[in-house]
Image (tube, rainbow, N blue to C red):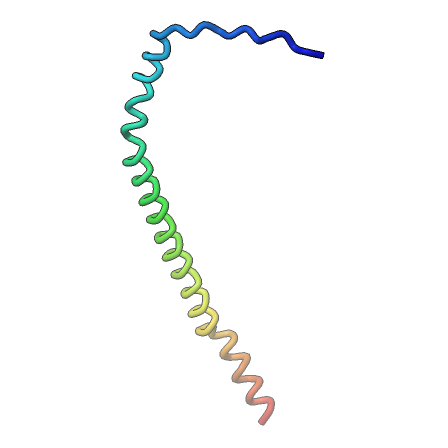
Amino acid sequence: FVAPPAARPEVDARVAVATVAGLAPLALEQPASAYDSVVAMLQSWLVGGTVLTVIFAAAIIAAAANPLTKRRQEVQNMMKK
C-alpha cells in the first residue's frame, strides 16, 4: 500500500510575516520573564522553608515545654521513689 502524496497547503507570505511579527515581542521578553520566574521560585522556596522551620521549631518548643508531660514525669519519678 502506497499513500498518495500529501497535498501541501499554500502558505501566504503575509501570514508568515504576521506570525513572526506577532511572536517577536515574546522572543524578546523571554530571558527577562525566565529570570523573573526563577527569582520568584527561589523566593517562594525561601519563604516556604522559613515558614516550615518556624512551624517545626514551634512544635519542638511546645513538645519540650508541655506542662502535662512535665507533670507526668514528676509523678512517675515520685512513684519510683
